[in-house]
Each structure stands twice: as structure tokens, then as C-alpha cells.
Length: 102
Image (cartoon, rainbow, N blue to C red; front, side, top):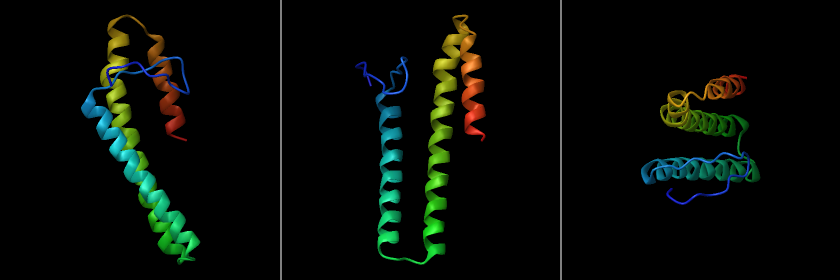
């Protein structure tokens, strides 16, 4: 978005285009709905394999979200920092990738 928002996890922030922002929020809203659906399944004593299939779908959706966010990060933040000679961004990216691959 255009206005600067305070981030809860880091001193850095990222300005996103309206399209990027809406895409990420829509993905998260769908994931949130899926998680609520899983909770209802547990509360309704649904059969374990049925719940596991839905959990797998949430994991796939989160992985997809990560791929989109990571690609945007590399195309914008990382590329801009490298062009400006800010090589510590590469170390930060490597650390993030290591955490994602656990």
C-alpha cells in the first residue's frame, strides 16, 4: 500500500502495489477460511483422514503463498538492494531460504 505501516516483526517495511496487496490478502483470507473449516471438522468429530486431507490443502496453500511472496521479495527488495550495493541482503535471503527449507 502507499502509506507506511508499522510491521510487527522487523524494523523494515515493504510498500506493495495495490494488486500485490490484494492478492496476498485474498490468499490469506482463503487460508483462514480453510483453517476455520478444519476446526469445524474437528468439533464435529469428522473422520481423521478427511481432516488430514484438508490440512494438506492448507499446507499447499501456505506453500503457494510463500512462493508468491518470496518471488516478489526477490524481484523488488533483493534486486534493489543488490543494485545499491547492499550485499547483506543476500545473507538475509540465504537465511530465509534455510528457514523455509526446514
